[in-house]
Length: 114
Length: 119
Image 1 (cartoon, rainbow over the protein chains, first blue to last red):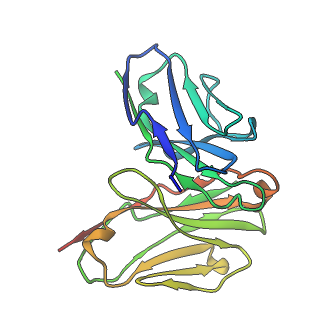
Image 2 (cartoon, helix red, strand yellow):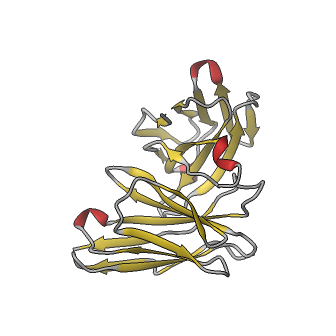
Image 3 (tube, each protein chain N blue to C red):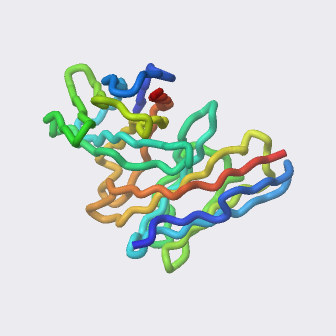
């Protein structure tokens, strides 16, 4: 089985721009979660999607949003980028329902905001 | 409030030494899950172990072992006879079981311990 894939792997954006990151979960997995990793704040939960519905959301401003498609692929969007949004964004997929504890992480997208 | 503390920011050992990574957690729930992940320089988080709050048995997997003690709210990780390939950042994480009713919930991570194993 292919693992979790995230695209792009690296991205450089300018402050004020917006960005969309993509995550393709493991085949058959229906849940996708997103995390932000920065040197200062560490790993922080952004949000989780299951069957195209957001089930859980972390403490991030509204500039951070996401969605999930019918094929379970997920995208997250950050609008009006700030320098502090520079981070490694990790996506995790899970089978969901009864096996929610199984989280498989992708390689991440490293976003640099200049 | 949920919280995970990994007091050791960085540890450096010489190959073949044993090393223990500490993890202390806080939660109000009686049912919860604890995890350890390894993050090599490539960035991908690699799952190592999951324990639920009702299972305090220590676990051993090869050179890895975990010591879960509810009385001290600790879930420590020991690597025996460390190797250079063990060099990575190790994260301890917590998730409350109520999140698993339908939701994967969110993992609360510690700040991580960077382990450097020198030859």
